[in-house]
Length: 460
Image (tube, rainbow, N blue to C red; front, side, top):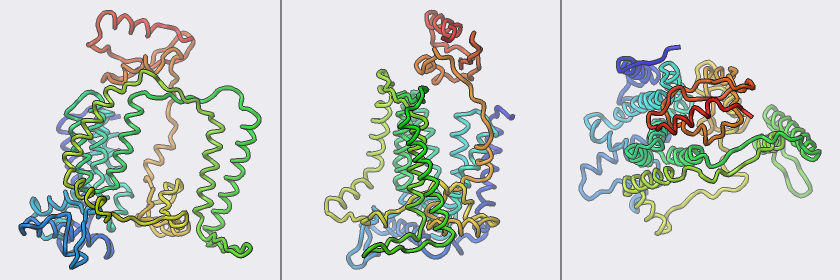
Protein backbone atom coordinates (compact mmCIF):
# COMPACT_ATOMS: atom_id res chain seq x y z
CA UNK A 1 0.00 0.00 0.00
CA UNK A 2 1.11 3.54 -0.66
CA UNK A 3 1.61 5.49 2.55
CA UNK A 4 2.95 8.92 3.20
CA UNK A 5 2.91 11.75 0.73
CA UNK A 6 3.90 15.36 0.87
CA UNK A 7 2.89 18.60 -0.70
CA UNK A 8 3.82 17.40 -4.19
CA UNK A 9 1.55 14.36 -3.97
CA UNK A 10 -1.30 16.39 -2.50
CA UNK A 11 -0.94 18.99 -5.26
CA UNK A 12 -0.89 16.26 -7.93
CA UNK A 13 -4.12 14.80 -6.54
CA UNK A 14 -5.78 18.22 -6.45
CA UNK A 15 -4.88 18.67 -10.13
CA UNK A 16 -6.37 15.26 -10.87
CA UNK A 17 -9.50 16.24 -8.94
CA UNK A 18 -9.83 19.40 -11.04
CA UNK A 19 -9.51 17.37 -14.24
CA UNK A 20 -12.02 14.84 -12.94
CA UNK A 21 -14.50 17.59 -12.04
CA UNK A 22 -14.40 18.92 -15.60
CA UNK A 23 -14.48 15.45 -17.21
CA UNK A 24 -17.24 14.12 -14.96
CA UNK A 25 -19.51 17.09 -15.67
CA UNK A 26 -18.67 17.16 -19.40
CA UNK A 27 -19.97 18.59 -21.72
CA UNK A 28 -20.90 21.33 -19.22
CA UNK A 29 -17.52 23.08 -19.55
CA UNK A 30 -18.01 23.22 -23.31
CA UNK A 31 -21.38 24.97 -23.03
CA UNK A 32 -20.78 27.60 -20.36
CA UNK A 33 -23.59 30.11 -20.48
CA UNK A 34 -25.53 28.36 -23.25
CA UNK A 35 -26.88 25.40 -21.29
CA UNK A 36 -27.49 24.24 -17.73
CA UNK A 37 -27.91 20.63 -16.55
CA UNK A 38 -31.29 18.96 -16.26
CA UNK A 39 -34.74 19.40 -17.70
CA UNK A 40 -36.60 22.69 -17.18
CA UNK A 41 -37.61 22.96 -13.54
CA UNK A 42 -35.84 23.75 -10.27
CA UNK A 43 -32.56 24.43 -12.06
CA UNK A 44 -33.92 27.72 -13.41
CA UNK A 45 -34.62 28.97 -9.89
CA UNK A 46 -30.94 28.68 -8.96
CA UNK A 47 -29.92 30.73 -11.99
CA UNK A 48 -32.55 33.26 -10.90
CA UNK A 49 -30.88 33.41 -7.45
CA UNK A 50 -27.63 34.47 -9.08
CA UNK A 51 -29.38 37.12 -11.16
CA UNK A 52 -31.31 38.42 -8.13
CA UNK A 53 -28.13 38.84 -6.05
CA UNK A 54 -26.56 40.88 -8.86
CA UNK A 55 -29.69 43.03 -9.09
CA UNK A 56 -29.74 43.59 -5.31
CA UNK A 57 -26.08 44.64 -5.22
CA UNK A 58 -26.62 47.02 -8.12
CA UNK A 59 -29.86 48.55 -6.80
CA UNK A 60 -29.80 50.54 -3.51
CA UNK A 61 -32.61 49.78 -1.11
CA UNK A 62 -33.22 46.17 -2.10
CA UNK A 63 -32.80 43.24 0.29
CA UNK A 64 -31.80 39.81 -0.93
CA UNK A 65 -34.14 37.78 1.26
CA UNK A 66 -37.27 39.64 0.14
CA UNK A 67 -38.32 40.27 -3.44
CA UNK A 68 -41.25 41.84 -5.23
CA UNK A 69 -40.19 40.20 -8.48
CA UNK A 70 -42.01 37.06 -7.34
CA UNK A 71 -45.71 37.06 -6.41
CA UNK A 72 -45.96 40.62 -7.71
CA UNK A 73 -47.20 43.04 -6.48
CA UNK A 74 -47.17 41.64 -2.95
CA UNK A 75 -43.71 40.12 -3.02
CA UNK A 76 -42.45 37.27 -0.89
CA UNK A 77 -39.61 36.18 1.33
CA UNK A 78 -37.05 33.76 -0.05
CA UNK A 79 -35.57 32.95 3.37
CA UNK A 80 -37.43 29.63 3.43
CA UNK A 81 -36.61 29.01 -0.23
CA UNK A 82 -33.40 27.31 -1.49
CA UNK A 83 -31.91 30.77 -1.93
CA UNK A 84 -28.22 29.72 -2.16
CA UNK A 85 -27.21 33.16 -0.88
CA UNK A 86 -23.50 32.34 -0.56
CA UNK A 87 -23.07 30.89 -4.08
CA UNK A 88 -25.17 33.75 -5.42
CA UNK A 89 -22.83 36.24 -3.76
CA UNK A 90 -19.82 34.50 -5.31
CA UNK A 91 -21.58 34.47 -8.66
CA UNK A 92 -22.27 38.21 -8.40
CA UNK A 93 -18.73 39.19 -7.34
CA UNK A 94 -15.95 36.77 -8.29
CA UNK A 95 -17.89 35.55 -11.32
CA UNK A 96 -19.57 38.87 -12.03
CA UNK A 97 -18.12 39.13 -15.54
CA UNK A 98 -19.86 35.90 -16.59
CA UNK A 99 -23.55 35.63 -17.35
CA UNK A 100 -25.76 34.16 -14.61
CA UNK A 101 -26.04 30.89 -16.56
CA UNK A 102 -22.28 30.69 -17.11
CA UNK A 103 -21.63 31.52 -13.46
CA UNK A 104 -23.99 28.74 -12.40
CA UNK A 105 -22.17 26.25 -14.64
CA UNK A 106 -18.80 27.28 -13.21
CA UNK A 107 -20.17 26.95 -9.68
CA UNK A 108 -21.35 23.42 -10.38
CA UNK A 109 -17.90 22.38 -11.60
CA UNK A 110 -16.38 24.07 -8.56
CA UNK A 111 -18.80 22.19 -6.27
CA UNK A 112 -17.63 18.85 -7.64
CA UNK A 113 -13.98 19.80 -7.21
CA UNK A 114 -14.65 21.03 -3.67
CA UNK A 115 -16.47 17.77 -2.86
CA UNK A 116 -13.41 15.79 -3.91
CA UNK A 117 -10.90 18.02 -2.14
CA UNK A 118 -12.86 18.30 1.11
CA UNK A 119 -13.39 14.57 1.49
CA UNK A 120 -9.75 13.94 0.62
CA UNK A 121 -8.70 16.34 3.40
CA UNK A 122 -10.94 14.58 5.91
CA UNK A 123 -9.83 11.07 4.93
CA UNK A 124 -6.14 12.06 4.90
CA UNK A 125 -6.42 13.60 8.36
CA UNK A 126 -7.96 10.42 9.75
CA UNK A 127 -5.90 7.78 7.92
CA UNK A 128 -2.68 9.36 6.60
CA UNK A 129 -3.12 6.90 3.72
CA UNK A 130 -2.85 8.47 0.27
CA UNK A 131 -4.64 5.81 -1.80
CA UNK A 132 -7.45 5.34 0.73
CA UNK A 133 -7.97 9.10 0.96
CA UNK A 134 -8.14 9.42 -2.83
CA UNK A 135 -10.66 6.57 -2.98
CA UNK A 136 -12.77 8.24 -0.30
CA UNK A 137 -12.66 11.51 -2.23
CA UNK A 138 -13.86 9.94 -5.47
CA UNK A 139 -16.50 7.82 -3.72
CA UNK A 140 -17.99 10.90 -2.08
CA UNK A 141 -17.22 13.67 -4.54
CA UNK A 142 -18.81 12.11 -7.63
CA UNK A 143 -21.31 9.88 -5.84
CA UNK A 144 -24.72 9.09 -7.35
CA UNK A 145 -26.20 11.47 -4.79
CA UNK A 146 -24.24 14.32 -6.38
CA UNK A 147 -24.86 13.08 -9.93
CA UNK A 148 -28.62 12.83 -9.60
CA UNK A 149 -28.94 16.31 -8.08
CA UNK A 150 -27.08 17.77 -11.04
CA UNK A 151 -30.40 17.33 -12.80
CA UNK A 152 -31.84 20.32 -10.99
CA UNK A 153 -31.16 20.47 -7.24
CA UNK A 154 -27.97 22.49 -7.63
CA UNK A 155 -27.75 23.41 -3.94
CA UNK A 156 -27.41 19.75 -2.97
CA UNK A 157 -24.50 19.26 -5.37
CA UNK A 158 -22.48 21.43 -2.97
CA UNK A 159 -21.92 18.63 -0.47
CA UNK A 160 -18.37 19.68 0.39
CA UNK A 161 -19.45 21.47 3.57
CA UNK A 162 -20.28 18.11 5.19
CA UNK A 163 -16.71 16.70 5.22
CA UNK A 164 -15.33 20.17 5.99
CA UNK A 165 -17.58 20.41 9.04
CA UNK A 166 -16.64 16.87 10.12
CA UNK A 167 -12.94 17.73 9.80
CA UNK A 168 -13.26 20.94 11.80
CA UNK A 169 -15.33 19.22 14.48
CA UNK A 170 -12.81 16.38 14.74
CA UNK A 171 -9.97 18.84 15.32
CA UNK A 172 -12.09 20.88 17.72
CA UNK A 173 -12.69 17.88 19.96
CA UNK A 174 -8.96 17.17 19.81
CA UNK A 175 -8.39 20.52 21.54
CA UNK A 176 -8.28 23.21 18.84
CA UNK A 177 -10.47 26.22 19.61
CA UNK A 178 -9.71 27.64 16.16
CA UNK A 179 -11.17 24.48 14.66
CA UNK A 180 -14.33 25.03 16.73
CA UNK A 181 -14.64 28.49 15.21
CA UNK A 182 -14.07 27.00 11.77
CA UNK A 183 -16.81 24.44 12.44
CA UNK A 184 -19.23 27.23 13.33
CA UNK A 185 -18.35 29.16 10.18
CA UNK A 186 -18.78 26.03 8.07
CA UNK A 187 -22.16 25.42 9.66
CA UNK A 188 -23.21 28.98 8.86
CA UNK A 189 -21.92 28.69 5.29
CA UNK A 190 -24.00 25.54 4.91
CA UNK A 191 -27.09 27.46 5.96
CA UNK A 192 -26.47 29.89 3.10
CA UNK A 193 -26.08 27.01 0.62
CA UNK A 194 -28.39 24.08 1.47
CA UNK A 195 -30.71 23.71 4.45
CA UNK A 196 -30.79 19.93 4.09
CA UNK A 197 -27.05 19.67 4.60
CA UNK A 198 -27.33 21.89 7.67
CA UNK A 199 -29.68 19.33 9.21
CA UNK A 200 -27.27 16.51 8.31
CA UNK A 201 -24.35 18.32 9.94
CA UNK A 202 -26.26 19.04 13.14
CA UNK A 203 -27.28 15.41 13.37
CA UNK A 204 -23.70 14.31 12.75
CA UNK A 205 -22.41 16.71 15.41
CA UNK A 206 -24.78 15.29 18.03
CA UNK A 207 -23.87 11.68 17.26
CA UNK A 208 -20.14 12.42 17.08
CA UNK A 209 -20.21 14.32 20.38
CA UNK A 210 -21.93 11.45 22.19
CA UNK A 211 -19.51 8.92 20.70
CA UNK A 212 -16.43 11.03 21.46
CA UNK A 213 -17.49 11.69 25.04
CA UNK A 214 -17.86 7.96 25.78
CA UNK A 215 -21.30 8.55 27.24
CA UNK A 216 -22.62 5.02 26.85
CA UNK A 217 -21.36 1.52 26.20
CA UNK A 218 -23.42 -1.02 24.32
CA UNK A 219 -22.72 -4.73 24.66
CA UNK A 220 -24.42 -7.87 23.51
CA UNK A 221 -25.97 -10.04 26.20
CA UNK A 222 -24.17 -13.38 26.38
CA UNK A 223 -26.67 -15.25 28.53
CA UNK A 224 -29.12 -17.77 27.12
CA UNK A 225 -32.25 -16.02 25.74
CA UNK A 226 -35.61 -16.78 27.28
CA UNK A 227 -38.31 -18.77 25.52
CA UNK A 228 -40.35 -15.60 24.99
CA UNK A 229 -37.45 -13.91 23.20
CA UNK A 230 -36.86 -16.94 21.00
CA UNK A 231 -40.51 -17.00 19.99
CA UNK A 232 -40.44 -13.25 19.38
CA UNK A 233 -37.46 -13.63 17.05
CA UNK A 234 -39.17 -16.35 15.05
CA UNK A 235 -42.45 -14.43 14.83
CA UNK A 236 -40.75 -11.17 13.80
CA UNK A 237 -38.70 -12.97 11.15
CA UNK A 238 -41.77 -14.74 9.79
CA UNK A 239 -43.77 -11.51 9.52
CA UNK A 240 -40.78 -9.80 7.87
CA UNK A 241 -40.59 -12.56 5.25
CA UNK A 242 -44.33 -12.31 4.61
CA UNK A 243 -44.09 -8.53 4.24
CA UNK A 244 -41.17 -8.93 1.82
CA UNK A 245 -43.24 -11.30 -0.33
CA UNK A 246 -46.15 -8.84 -0.33
CA UNK A 247 -43.85 -5.93 -1.24
CA UNK A 248 -42.30 -7.92 -4.08
CA UNK A 249 -45.72 -8.93 -5.40
CA UNK A 250 -46.94 -5.32 -5.38
CA UNK A 251 -43.74 -4.13 -7.08
CA UNK A 252 -44.05 -6.76 -9.82
CA UNK A 253 -47.79 -6.63 -10.47
CA UNK A 254 -48.52 -3.02 -9.62
CA UNK A 255 -50.72 -3.97 -6.67
CA UNK A 256 -54.45 -3.73 -6.33
CA UNK A 257 -57.26 -2.15 -4.36
CA UNK A 258 -59.10 -4.33 -1.85
CA UNK A 259 -62.74 -3.65 -0.99
CA UNK A 260 -63.40 -4.34 2.67
CA UNK A 261 -66.91 -3.62 3.86
CA UNK A 262 -67.74 -0.06 2.94
CA UNK A 263 -64.15 1.08 2.47
CA UNK A 264 -61.30 0.37 0.11
CA UNK A 265 -57.71 -0.46 0.98
CA UNK A 266 -55.20 0.68 -1.62
CA UNK A 267 -52.16 -1.57 -2.01
CA UNK A 268 -50.63 -0.15 -5.17
CA UNK A 269 -47.19 0.73 -3.78
CA UNK A 270 -44.94 -1.48 -1.62
CA UNK A 271 -44.05 1.25 0.87
CA UNK A 272 -46.22 0.04 3.76
CA UNK A 273 -45.12 -3.57 3.26
CA UNK A 274 -41.48 -2.51 3.19
CA UNK A 275 -41.95 -0.46 6.35
CA UNK A 276 -43.47 -3.47 8.11
CA UNK A 277 -40.62 -5.67 6.88
CA UNK A 278 -37.88 -3.35 8.21
CA UNK A 279 -39.66 -2.85 11.53
CA UNK A 280 -39.96 -6.60 12.03
CA UNK A 281 -36.32 -7.13 11.09
CA UNK A 282 -35.34 -4.45 13.59
CA UNK A 283 -37.34 -6.20 16.32
CA UNK A 284 -35.70 -9.49 15.36
CA UNK A 285 -32.22 -7.94 15.50
CA UNK A 286 -32.79 -6.39 18.93
CA UNK A 287 -34.24 -9.64 20.28
CA UNK A 288 -31.25 -11.53 18.87
CA UNK A 289 -28.56 -9.12 20.05
CA UNK A 290 -30.25 -8.10 23.33
CA UNK A 291 -28.07 -5.02 23.86
CA UNK A 292 -27.01 -3.93 27.31
CA UNK A 293 -26.63 -0.16 27.60
CA UNK A 294 -24.56 1.33 30.41
CA UNK A 295 -24.08 5.02 31.18
CA UNK A 296 -20.48 6.06 31.90
CA UNK A 297 -20.54 8.57 34.79
CA UNK A 298 -17.23 10.32 34.01
CA UNK A 299 -17.92 11.05 30.36
CA UNK A 300 -15.84 13.82 28.81
CA UNK A 301 -18.57 16.44 28.76
CA UNK A 302 -16.30 19.40 29.55
CA UNK A 303 -14.67 19.47 26.13
CA UNK A 304 -17.98 18.68 24.42
CA UNK A 305 -19.64 21.69 26.05
CA UNK A 306 -16.63 23.90 25.28
CA UNK A 307 -16.81 22.98 21.62
CA UNK A 308 -20.62 23.21 21.48
CA UNK A 309 -20.87 26.77 22.76
CA UNK A 310 -18.10 27.99 20.46
CA UNK A 311 -19.61 26.34 17.41
CA UNK A 312 -23.10 27.54 18.34
CA UNK A 313 -22.04 31.13 19.05
CA UNK A 314 -20.11 31.47 15.80
CA UNK A 315 -23.00 29.95 13.85
CA UNK A 316 -25.58 32.31 15.36
CA UNK A 317 -23.43 35.36 14.65
CA UNK A 318 -22.50 34.36 11.10
CA UNK A 319 -26.00 33.17 10.18
CA UNK A 320 -27.80 36.02 11.99
CA UNK A 321 -29.18 37.71 8.81
CA UNK A 322 -30.81 34.46 7.75
CA UNK A 323 -31.98 33.61 11.27
CA UNK A 324 -33.49 37.11 11.59
CA UNK A 325 -35.48 36.66 8.41
CA UNK A 326 -36.69 33.28 9.60
CA UNK A 327 -37.76 34.79 12.93
CA UNK A 328 -39.72 37.51 11.12
CA UNK A 329 -41.59 34.90 9.12
CA UNK A 330 -42.49 32.95 12.25
CA UNK A 331 -43.56 35.99 14.29
CA UNK A 332 -45.76 37.29 11.47
CA UNK A 333 -47.32 33.88 10.99
CA UNK A 334 -46.10 33.78 7.40
CA UNK A 335 -44.12 30.58 7.73
CA UNK A 336 -46.11 27.79 6.14
CA UNK A 337 -45.27 24.17 5.49
CA UNK A 338 -46.99 21.29 3.81
CA UNK A 339 -49.43 19.35 5.93
CA UNK A 340 -48.61 15.66 5.84
CA UNK A 341 -50.63 12.61 6.73
CA UNK A 342 -49.70 8.95 7.01
CA UNK A 343 -50.41 8.41 3.31
CA UNK A 344 -48.83 11.63 2.01
CA UNK A 345 -45.69 11.96 4.13
CA UNK A 346 -42.41 11.66 2.18
CA UNK A 347 -41.11 8.12 2.39
CA UNK A 348 -37.42 8.94 2.55
CA UNK A 349 -34.71 6.56 1.38
CA UNK A 350 -35.53 2.89 1.73
CA UNK A 351 -32.79 0.56 2.90
CA UNK A 352 -33.05 -1.26 -0.43
CA UNK A 353 -31.95 1.87 -2.31
CA UNK A 354 -28.21 0.98 -2.10
CA UNK A 355 -29.04 -2.15 -4.12
CA UNK A 356 -31.06 -0.49 -6.89
CA UNK A 357 -28.11 0.83 -8.91
CA UNK A 358 -27.39 4.32 -10.15
CA UNK A 359 -30.35 5.96 -11.93
CA UNK A 360 -27.99 8.18 -13.94
CA UNK A 361 -25.42 5.58 -14.98
CA UNK A 362 -25.46 5.14 -18.79
CA UNK A 363 -25.33 1.36 -18.46
CA UNK A 364 -27.82 0.59 -15.71
CA UNK A 365 -29.94 3.76 -15.62
CA UNK A 366 -33.03 2.26 -17.38
CA UNK A 367 -33.06 -0.78 -15.11
CA UNK A 368 -32.42 1.30 -12.00
CA UNK A 369 -35.16 3.79 -12.81
CA UNK A 370 -37.66 0.98 -13.39
CA UNK A 371 -36.73 -0.46 -10.00
CA UNK A 372 -37.31 2.89 -8.29
CA UNK A 373 -40.63 3.24 -10.13
CA UNK A 374 -41.69 -0.26 -9.07
CA UNK A 375 -41.05 0.68 -5.45
CA UNK A 376 -43.00 3.91 -5.89
CA UNK A 377 -39.96 6.10 -5.31
CA UNK A 378 -38.70 9.25 -7.00
CA UNK A 379 -35.10 8.38 -7.80
CA UNK A 380 -34.00 12.02 -7.61
CA UNK A 381 -35.31 12.35 -4.06
CA UNK A 382 -34.41 8.89 -2.75
CA UNK A 383 -31.19 7.84 -4.50
CA UNK A 384 -29.06 5.68 -2.23
CA UNK A 385 -26.69 3.81 -4.54
CA UNK A 386 -23.17 3.82 -3.09
CA UNK A 387 -21.27 2.64 -6.15
CA UNK A 388 -19.72 -0.66 -7.19
CA UNK A 389 -16.32 -0.19 -5.54
CA UNK A 390 -17.70 0.82 -2.09
CA UNK A 391 -20.06 -2.16 -2.10
CA UNK A 392 -17.17 -4.50 -3.01
CA UNK A 393 -15.08 -3.03 -0.20
CA UNK A 394 -17.93 -3.45 2.27
CA UNK A 395 -18.18 -7.10 1.24
CA UNK A 396 -14.52 -7.76 2.01
CA UNK A 397 -13.86 -9.56 5.30
CA UNK A 398 -12.10 -7.30 7.78
CA UNK A 399 -9.90 -8.60 10.61
CA UNK A 400 -11.53 -8.38 14.00
CA UNK A 401 -9.12 -7.99 16.88
CA UNK A 402 -10.27 -8.72 20.38
CA UNK A 403 -9.17 -6.51 23.21
CA UNK A 404 -8.01 -7.77 26.59
CA UNK A 405 -10.91 -8.01 29.00
CA UNK A 406 -9.14 -5.73 31.47
CA UNK A 407 -8.67 -2.97 28.90
CA UNK A 408 -11.84 -0.94 29.36
CA UNK A 409 -12.78 2.14 27.33
CA UNK A 410 -11.16 4.47 29.88
CA UNK A 411 -7.81 2.67 29.72
CA UNK A 412 -7.76 2.88 25.93
CA UNK A 413 -9.01 6.45 25.91
CA UNK A 414 -5.48 7.89 25.89
CA UNK A 415 -4.65 6.10 22.67
CA UNK A 416 -7.68 7.80 21.09
CA UNK A 417 -6.04 11.22 21.43
CA UNK A 418 -2.44 10.30 20.67
CA UNK A 419 -1.26 10.47 17.11
CA UNK A 420 0.22 7.03 17.26
CA UNK A 421 -0.28 3.86 15.27
CA UNK A 422 -1.75 1.08 17.38
CA UNK A 423 -0.20 -2.35 17.37
CA UNK A 424 -1.36 -5.69 18.76
CA UNK A 425 0.31 -7.10 21.83
CA UNK A 426 -0.39 -10.76 22.78
CA UNK A 427 -1.61 -11.41 26.31
CA UNK A 428 -0.84 -14.58 28.28
CA UNK A 429 -4.10 -16.24 27.40
CA UNK A 430 -3.78 -15.47 23.72
CA UNK A 431 -6.21 -12.54 23.74
CA UNK A 432 -4.95 -9.51 21.83
CA UNK A 433 -4.85 -5.99 23.22
CA UNK A 434 -4.60 -2.77 21.24
CA UNK A 435 -1.69 -0.70 22.52
CA UNK A 436 -0.10 2.56 21.38
CA UNK A 437 3.22 2.18 19.60
CA UNK A 438 4.78 5.32 21.09
CA UNK A 439 4.39 6.86 24.52
CA UNK A 440 2.82 10.23 24.95
CA UNK A 441 5.71 12.62 25.73
CA UNK A 442 3.40 14.49 28.10
CA UNK A 443 3.32 11.48 30.44
CA UNK A 444 5.51 11.76 33.52
CA UNK A 445 7.43 8.95 35.21
CA UNK A 446 4.36 7.79 37.10
CA UNK A 447 2.29 7.86 33.93
CA UNK A 448 4.86 5.81 32.02
CA UNK A 449 5.04 3.31 34.85
CA UNK A 450 1.28 2.95 34.80
CA UNK A 451 1.38 2.48 31.05
CA UNK A 452 3.95 -0.31 31.41
CA UNK A 453 1.80 -2.02 34.04
CA UNK A 454 -1.20 -1.89 31.72
CA UNK A 455 0.85 -3.38 28.90
CA UNK A 456 2.02 -6.38 30.89
CA UNK A 457 -1.10 -6.97 32.96
CA UNK A 458 -2.55 -10.40 32.07
CA UNK A 459 -6.10 -10.53 30.89
CA UNK A 460 -8.51 -12.08 33.32
